[in-house]
Length: 288
Image (cartoon, rainbow, N blue to C red):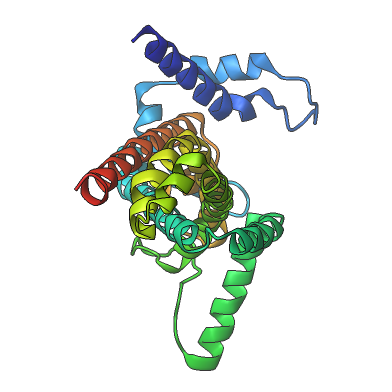
């Protein structure tokens, strides 16, 4: 319990420092030395209204155009980002588990790891830009609309960007699972089960998956952190209305602090939901 409390305190401090980092910079001096006085002055001027209203748009000259109700606007944005994060993680998890099951033979596993290792070198934004180019080219050729690139885009759930948001966690999981599948198939208890004439499906579910699950759970936090990082890129380049919109457009400390806090809570919730999914998968398909 005490360890959990310390983790929460550390997380809150870290989010606050990240959200307030721009306050430590002085654009006029262009200095890398933190300006703690600037940050203290801003914090002293904070009021309750600072956490309820925000400037929701800026003109080209940097002048505020209008004020928005933060807690009213942030709910649909949080739902959009939360759904994108959840669905992309589930796509990555399911596809990687299927690929690990299908491609666990030695030569296929080696080939998959080689392809994934090659693709993993390419940065996320390159895939996103390529995806935008493909969508535009397809629309010009066929009239099929895969996405809408507009800063005034509606909150309709974007399906096309999910493919690119799930790429990074998917490639990481496929590479990890392919390696672990190959490693586990060389264990003595697997060889014994095969010698007894047990079916391949039974061995994969009852022996391989049970020993694979701890590795999957151990890497789950890393997978979620990779996906959250990709979420910033995907939402920004696809102009998707989500929590990152509040972070990128018009810096305000309270707004960024709240957006980062909610995004962190969403990531934690996704972690426990996926843990529940793995638990139910084991109860239904393995223990019957």
